[in-house]
Image 1 (tube, rainbow, N blue to C red):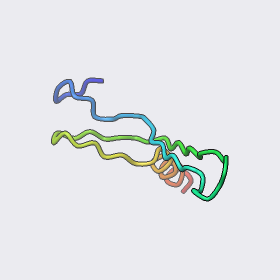
Image 2 (tube, rainbow, N blue to C red):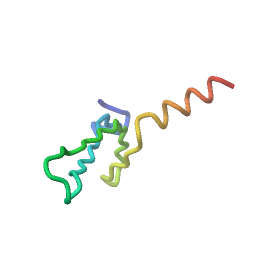
Image 3 (tube, rainbow, N blue to C red):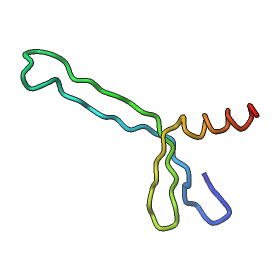
Image 4 (tube, rainbow, N blue to C red):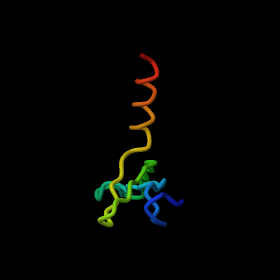
Length: 66
């Protein structure tokens, strides 16, 4: 993706995962993996700020509903 300021990517689509093991007092059991879609914004300082994918999606729905 290219913008007018150069060849830096400014928006990144991705996901984060949280892995939760079973309780330590449980024999067997399985881990739980939660995958959350995210949108990342890259700024000129080299920092990537991420938000949940549905946050801007829900905001747009609310704006267009009114």
